[in-house]
Amino acid sequence: MSSVKLEQISRKFASNAAASEQRFIGVDDISLEIPDGEFWVLVGPSGCGKSTLLRIIAGLETATSGNIYIGDRLVNQVPARQRDVAMVFQNYALYPHMSVAENLAFGMQMRGMDKSTIERRVIDVAKSLQIDMLLDRKPKQLSGGQQQRVALGRAIARSPQVFLLDEPLSNLDAGLRDSTRAELKQLHQQVGITTIYVTHDCTEAMTLADRIVVLDRGYIKQIGTPDEIYHHPVDRMVATFIGSPPMNIIPAIYQNGIWQIGNSQIACPAELTSQLQLRSGQGLDLGIRAEYLTICPNSTPDALFATIRGIESQGRETLVKAQINGTSTNINLLATPNWIEKNSGESRTLLGKQLTIALSLEWLFIFDPSTGRKLFPR
Ligand code: ATP
Image (cartoon, rainbow, N blue to C red; front, side, top):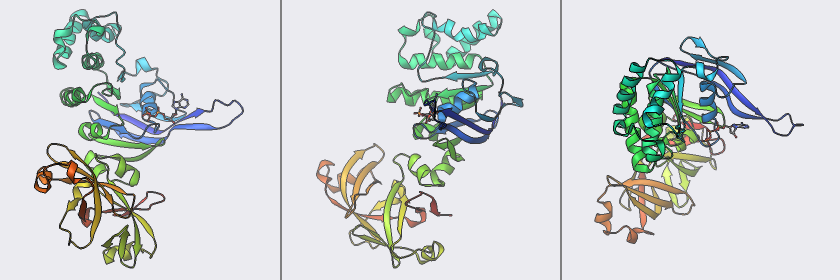
């Protein structure tokens, strides 16, 4: 086990055009320190540099500049196989001609471990991943989920200092993904190997991570615990990337003490007007999560008027999708499970119906509409 420290890591890719000096940014100026034994998740939209960063740590890609430390050791010049890291990709890459037991043993044999230790370790790892009944099978005789467990087991069996996982669950169907995710979390709690996990799935990030690193176009946007990132996003990009459903973004025009949103008007608290020095005619993006919007009686002041466009029952709660009247803005809000029953008994008949929606202003964010910078809270 070991900490991982990155100091100002950049990776620039040369353009294919020989005459061009253009360089594409893979990652830029990444500095972070992952304490020994923690589970960190790298998230961000496609092309933000997640895999490049992971490959640089693994030694499969060379940084253009910067330093990588695993524990106290500077590993910039250390080849991948001597870094003592294990990497698992989304395509399991098992050796097809070897049995599960042989796949699990392979890394340990390569490191010259003695036979009885290897045999014991294969059994232990196979039991912890519940693949001990599959040890004699070949990979093609396994389901996708079982193959992925073998790939994880092969990496764990080596007891690496660092575990690197690149979208390891993305090839699994939804049910298996949930159960394997839970097992992975449990496994990490048992073995405590420092883990860096790449995903574009924010639910995976929220449920697995000790800390989340949000990347955008090669840069770090924010590092924080799942709660910090969810409740205190640094800007609109993070606010809308993390959370399912994503934070609602409602464009508004400030006008003499009110926010005009299509046909709806909401009083802007006086202290916000002065704190943000709002000018009449100024556009703002109001950000609010689905759980802080409430369906309320028609006569409620300072409410949004919207039309129901969709309803998704999610068991414990109902996700209502609505369009704010007089705008093209769509929002998500949560209703209690019996809300449909109380209203009509059938979600289909509610489509097109009018809603009055109150906002909990204490959970409101305000973003600059052109840059996405957070204006409030500061
Ligand atoms: P995804 O979620 O789609 O897998 P990612 O966040 O893992 O994306 P990377 O694969 O790390 O993103 O790529 C980061 C950026 O670097 C992208 O713009 C990509 O096009 C670029 N890039 C990656 N590898 C190369 C390469 N070998 N040559 C040129 N550009 C590259």
